[in-house]
Image 1 (tube, rainbow, N blue to C red):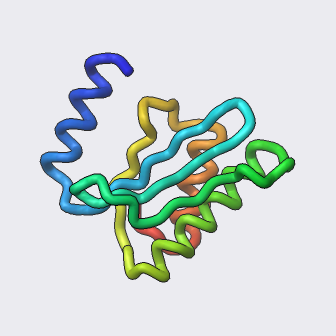
Image 2: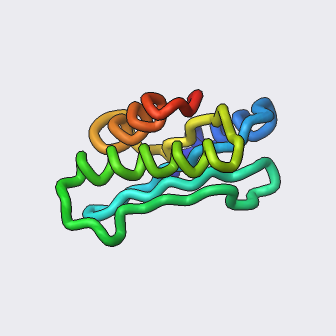
Length: 104
């Protein structure tokens, strides 16, 4: 992670009162977690048991994380893409979560 990304994350943590939706991905799988200000995991979803294409995995994980957030009464989050470009699987995940009602 380069310096500018770390600075943005630090600023986001100081200014936002919302929980963070953190997205990580590997070559095979995609992961999403919602953390509160103290770093406690409130919700998590991943595609570990899926053999589908990456775009379908991202869509499913976005829908899962939004459903879990809705159950836990989390309406709005700050999107933390962890230095990843907002395209491909990251974008699909975010759009799927928005479509399910999660405010990003």
